[in-house]
Image 1 (cartoon, rainbow, N blue to C red):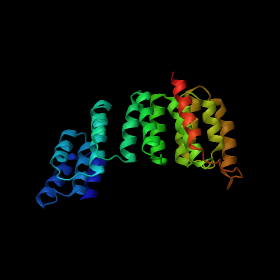
Image 2: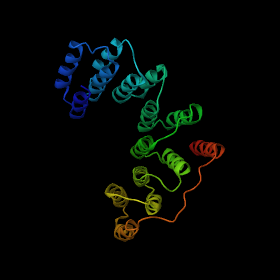
Image 3: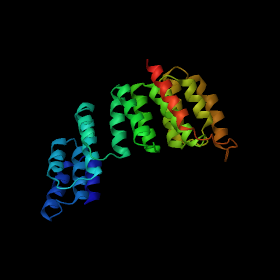
Image 4: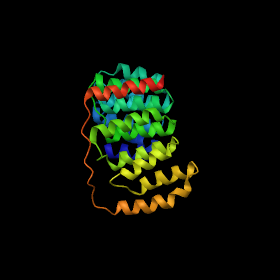
Length: 258
């Protein structure tokens, strides 16, 4: 059934999803947390938050995933104000829940709120940012034009893993700087990436064209092909930063926000 609900969610086929929901109830799986989570996720992704809420309220037992599914739907369909109420009422929060809430704030331009929550997530709860979370933050920064948060996340990634940033994160960093108008910085990040793919190139070239720097593209493309042909790099990764140094970075971010 999980596969069915996932397929319906991806395709937006709520009719089949509703039939699957009915079957779950009919065969006595209505009390299954996993099954209910799949049903709620399907309804949320099909835009039927009311139906998802009904399933959630009827659940005798809820997991952190159950709460996270509802949080995602509320933030996307009702806004961050309502989402924050759900977030504050969650008995437990995982990295996904924190990411949903922070990205929600950044996406609508509520940078201070998003950064405050990000700081609480890292320093208050001791949670780290994985590749998926980093990319989500960078994408939200790119869409909102929030260079400050984007730079903070970029610094976090560099301090955490040194020069060996994952290609997915590196591409998101390039895209963020390019869309925020920091083309020179995007070029520097691009040049220092150990690996690149077509998405990385598209992010850079579209950024150059967007800001009238398209004439640089052939030169950078030639240099990029040479770099991409290398099998490795002699650059040594930077050491992880100490917690006080990272907190100093947070202080500088806040000072920049004024």
